[in-house]
Length: 477
Image (cartoon, rainbow, N blue to C red; front, side, top):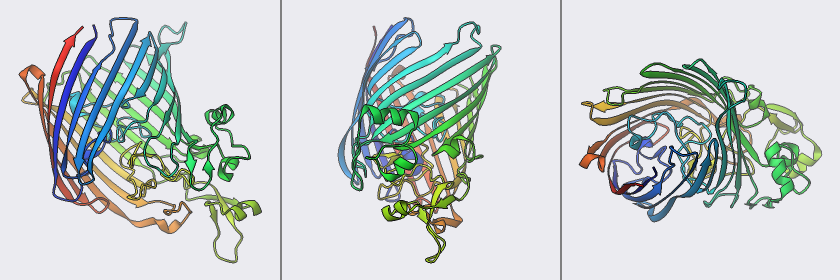
């Protein structure tokens, strides 16, 4: 049966510094106060009815946030979707799904990326549509081989360097089930930012022909910027997923390698060992004192090497391509053709892989204050997430992250400059602890949380939040 719900959340946030600590705002879908302030969030909806073959769901949420930036109304979600067997279609604005969840879903994910380095829950969503194939068993394999994936298109709605940029997503995975306990998953998740109006190159042509070029990764035609003619049309990026899962009688363990790429060299593993390695131990009994453990190691230090170069053509020199480089004033001009992958940044789409100033991908890529991409796509990090239930009754979550941040190979103008890379890293430690007190048979939840930032990459501060969530209506239909 479908459930119908209406809930209201009220939250207050307080910090010892000018901004809230890292884990107070990261992976919160971009709605949390960025400084001292508050949030009111009203949600309503109806989830899928899992007992039927043909299902439908819908949801909406609207927030009001007040902090040092002033008061703002936040359209958080507005979506509807249908599902028939393994086929699913969603239209509107919704939160991306996150994995590695805490003992209570109210507490969110234990992972720094939510299980996807390219699309975490760190920023506000983009409206669009998503056509999905959920795990489908290939005929004659007796369920041992499954495929699943997604095809979708979205539009950015924030004030950004290239206004109105579009985003295309294609992802595909294959899973091998060996017995009832062990599975292996491999796949690719690809994103392309294209279209929009650029202050440098004007309005970018959006046409069926260019859409096919975006989907297939082909280069642009004469009306495209020079970089799109040389490489692929639009700003391409994605991840390669490798995952192992083992399910015991009352517990499970998984290992995941989530590898980013920004160009063809990354897709061919030239940027190994860049990516996130995640180890997750989970017990079915979420009332245990400790029910879930997530450890992650992050590194982006390779980026296919410092750079690969070739001699530039006269046309590229005349056009002032930002990838031009020469050793000194008397040497010839070279063009950076690969390497120094510059994750989450782009010379044409200068806002990079952000939405409303927050990283769409993993939040350990720190956004520049001027809204032009990230300033630290060279980093290593260790992350630990723990969760369970205090006294077997009150869910809790602890996050601890230590990172060393080396900057970028490119400056703020997206020109290659080896001096942009720090010789000595900026060290950063961020932590957060939260717990949940369910009252009135779970209809009322009180969630206190404390956070700490210490280091050189982010402002040093201590912060706390207190939220109250009340299910105004919850009806089984």
